[in-house]
Amino acid sequence: MSDLVFDESVILLDVEGETDTQVLEIIAKNLVNHGLVKESFISAIMTREEEYATGLPTAGVSVAIPHTDVEHVIKKTISVAVLKQPVDFKIMGDDSETIPVQLVFMLAMDEADSQLVLLQRLMQIFQEEDTLKYIIRQTNKINIKNLLEKKLVSIAFEGGEK
Image 1 (cartoon, one colour):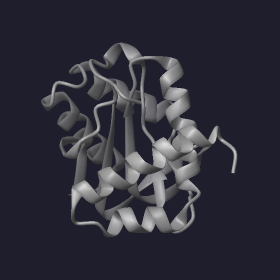
Image 2 (cartoon, helix red, strand yellow; image 1 turned 60 degrees about the vertical axis):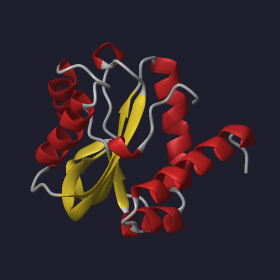
Image 3 (cartoon, rainbow, N blue to C red; image 1 turned 90 degrees about the horizontal axis):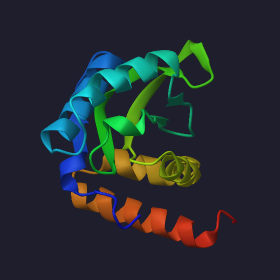
Image 4 (cartoon, one colour; image 1 turned 135 degrees about the vertical axis):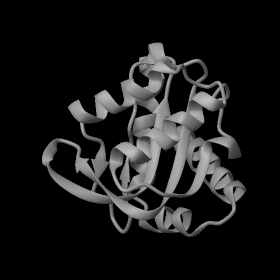
């Protein structure tokens, strides 16, 4: 996790979009603008979301975890976006249904293995309703950064066991 770029520049608050595509484009363009992903990342994330939906009906606050192939990534990062209003995303594993998402974790991993590990760690956080509610209430990006860094590191040292 040490070479992961995770700072205030990749945490977006009050993101406004009417569709999942608009939201994904805003987040992906921010990553391009910060030199973390290639321009091709934008269309790749859209294509992958169409093929494999990433909306998750989690307790209290629904999330989406869009990600795409490693060849579009310059530096490994995770972007967190708190949406001003929930936006419908298709549900992972059942793209005939949608879920109103308010929190998006966009992954840009430079190795397939690291993406899997991060997904597993995030899934543990997604089970914590209080944590998700805390994130969407925040107006300070540093609070979100500190909380997620602490959670991701503690999960890494737990070895996945509770």
